[in-house]
Amino acid sequence: MKPMNNKSCVVLSILIMTLGTSSFLNAQYFELASPEIRVWADQIVVKRNTVEARGDVFMHQSPLTIYAGYIKLDLQTKMLVADKTVLAQFKDACLTGNHLRLDLNTQNGIIHQGTFFYEPGPLYLKGNRIEKTGPNSYYVDDVLVTGCDICDPDWSITGKDVHITIDGYARLWHGKMFVKNMPVFYTPFFIFPVKKERQSGLLFPFVEQSLRKGWLYQQPFYMVLGQRFDATLYTTYMEKRGIMNGLEFRYNTGDDNTGTVMVDYLDDRQQETCSNHSQWGYDHDHYLRSNADRYWFRMKLDQPLIFNTMAKLDIDWVSDPDYLKTFDTSYTGFEQSRKSLFDRHHRTIDDSDETIRSNRLLIYRKFDFSRIYGEFQWFDDVYHRKLDLDPSPIHQLPVIRFSSIQSPLWQLPIFLNFDTQYAYDYQENAHNRHNLYMASGMTLPVDILPFAVIEPSFHIKGGYSHSSFERKSTHQKIIKTAITSELYKIYSFGLNRANRKVKRNSSTLSAFMLHIHIAQILMKISISFICSVKNQTRFIG
Figure 1: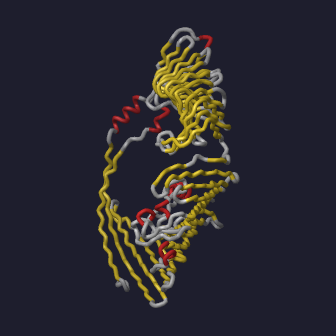
Figure 2 (figure 1 turned 30 degrees about the vertical axis):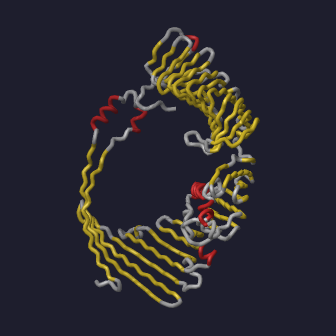
Figure 3 (figure 1 turned 180 degrees about the horizontal axis):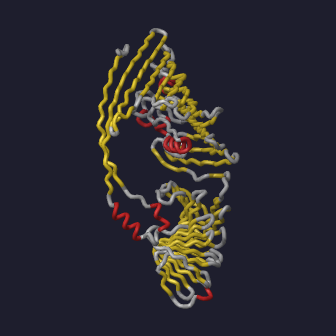
């Protein structure tokens, strides 16, 4: 463990039998050989049988680590007292609070105004007095259980007489469940798992009340299907609309092979008519939603293929234009679905008011200086599908592109780049089109002076388009020459001062010399002149 920056470091070895008089150590480090205890602090005072440490105190006794503003240790009884924002990290859990009293022989103790944190959950338990009663057991008299420490939690549970066993269960009495600070449920006895491994079972429900849905209660059930597979079943009761059922299936087999499939279905009690449009409809269009079968299917897959290629599949299929506006909350709502898909696959979905939903299959491979990919894009126009409205969207089935960045040509001082793309535009009941695009460039940078570079370049672009009713081709040639010059000066601020600081502290900070960087600001002025000649049909030499 490294001591903190800008603090002196002296190693002190102590034999307890020889401790007699009080001494003040102008140091930062204290070590006890048996049992092995290490302390870093701003100040350490060793008396006859006690050690007191003040200011940014760090103590380690494997597997225990404690951070605090003050620590007092009895060397005979191994009783420890810590104050001023205490953090105690045990093997499987973490305790924070204002005052800690701990027996280092058993590592059992009591922390006041404390928070118990268990990372695999994550799970937070807060109480005025948290007691560690064994290697893996804790006790809290009055507790608040949440899944978030600093945010406004979606849910919380309060209870009394709570017994917690790591990699086991937590049991509490007189449990009350709150959703957004609103009490929704009471039970005289409640038990929930505190385990490292995943376990099938009920998850915390989602409850809300709204004008369009009435009271909503959503109960998820989590299922472990294997080491790399799991699923969640959702049953959602809506007072005004009926019962919606949903499924979310996930897998992660490693090597970027991940997938998420989500689907929800509702037989809606409410249908939009002219008389109830203001109650069940929206003002973004003048069409009435007459369907009762409402669903939303979304899926994202990442799949490695042969020859170092990668495939990505995105599907987004919704029953009607109003679905994502109506069902935008809960665990299966639009906002939570978009967040979950982005967190797992780093790709988002279209906005909730977008009625043309994009679906695509992308297959690509990257090389050192180039890449090739093929993509199929299908745009689902909900209005066109449900109401047969024209025009239909234009799909690209497929797009094939091969491109390279500017790279050297063998050992020559010539740099080449190119970009080639083919796309087939498909539109229902319309003329389809083939599109071909090509571009290439060559540059030859030459140093004419130590401070000037001339960079002649030649670029050519061309395109070809063909449809059932017209043929059209275009090409373009571009020649460019660029002359650039750079003038710069390096300004250093605080150089001598920093050197003096390093030199002054060299005797005590020799271990940190490599971590000190001198700040510099680079002022750069660029003057450039570019000549270009363009001709849409031919190059005139």
